[in-house]
Length: 237
Image (cartoon, rainbow, N blue to C red; front, side, top):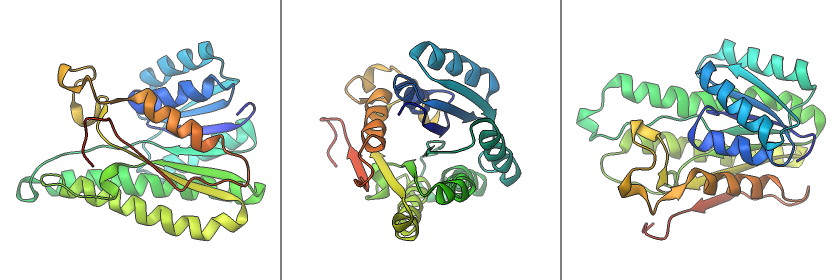
């Protein structure tokens, strides 16, 4: 990963932060993207201490087309290339359908689907020109299954899976890889929950997901990992 340029969305905490630290340990150059500049600066400091070759922070709402365009422009101006995009930004509300507001529905699709689309579309021209690149999406195991009380969120992750599978068919022959990481129950701040809560002690940790990302990203040029589904041992799929 040394000298590779890695763009990570949702990089200000949780899984995104641990992904940044994993790549930093490989001396990669990082572009940390999120909406909170203070948290981004905190992660930037940790990444530099962990060995990152360089770290750029770009405060960005990934659901906003103009902000994503600026993020890509700033990245290319600084580094001249983009090797890996990790689409990690995501939100979730978990309610029965009749209790889910249109605002909640729309906000999940704005971040989880539209944001992923905008960031992917934004980096593709550089990757295609290079003839190499890797799009890694942090999806969810519910991209392959369903459960009661999560219809809106599950719909976004099914959308991510379909988008990624189609994209892979478009760009694989041009040297660009597409990988989906599908975690099960993971101990983070997701959905406004408490990281480190007692009931989560046997769940996956953010670092488990980061290591899966690094595994997929570290494969030889001719090897593509389509999907990685990862669960804690206590979870039935």
